[in-house]
Image (cartoon, rainbow, N blue to C red):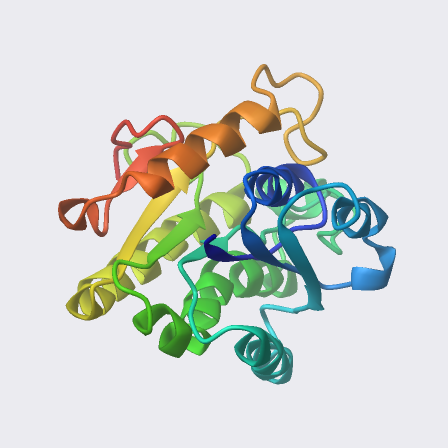
Length: 243
């Protein structure tokens, strides 16, 4: 049984990752900003084989990070896997930015929206990993998987849209690649993964990829990671993504 922490576990890919890790009998710490409202997540604890602990976590709050760490550390002395999944896309559920045009059209960009997206998508994964580093270091070859996006690729970016989201994912890639270089000295393997365009609240109904398929690929990829892959940026199928 592995010990797994997943942020943004209340819906979409995070919920599906939680479901699949529980199905194989793992201990899952499922983090969400509002646990009481996460009814689908709460229900998984009654339906699956593994052990589910739902905990409150706002990745932009130092106090929330410290409280979440204390709760996890009280239940386990190590983490095998950390999945940084929490993220927001302006105009979509949970983003707190209702009108996507405010952040996606030149001439309507706002500083406060940029900072909100960057705080969650870029700085959040870095600080979550930093907070839980003692538990990750306690396990040989623990893994950190941070969910990125093809929109965060400088080489592939060709559209004049999703300014803040795209930039936040590019920044997250740099943060976590830098972290990988340091964390690798402790035997931790850290990678960035493009989960693909999925049929979720964020991806929309036009996406072709089911979240279950992406989650299955990410779990398989995470299980098979080797030290030489530390710091890499890949798809959910393990193929390299252009920086």
